[in-house]
Amino acid sequence: MPLVTFEKGGGTFTEEVPENANLVVRAGVKKFPWPHLRYGCGMGKCAKCACRVLSGAEHLPAPNWKEEKQLGPRLAEGYRLVCQLWLSHDIALAQDEQPLRPLGSVTGGA
Ligand code: FES
Image (tube, rainbow, N blue to C red):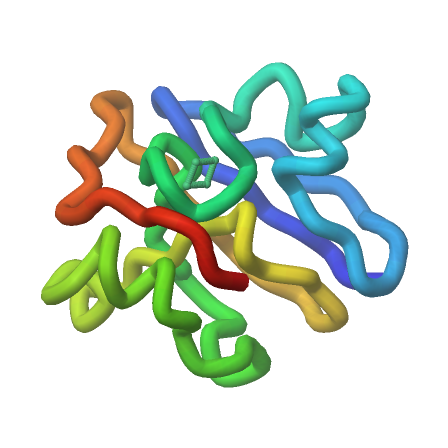
């Protein structure tokens, strides 16, 4: 099972999650990383769930079009939209105190 390390506000929270877990879905049903993870739409539109990947990025798929649209150059800084990620490997994430502003509006599509 993937081990997730989540840093926010000076705290570090670590827990194993089931294979193929989505952290926003988990937070939505009040499981780790709830209550620490900030999120909004769950659909790649708001960028509230954006986190920097501290380790484990090599196991993630390439960013999808929603991440490219909302994060743009911040992808190169290691940010990802965790609502768009299904985890099957260990990962360490950090979420900024202030939410990122989404760069674009997402309408329709998958
Ligand atoms: S929760 Fe809105 S973009 Fe991830």
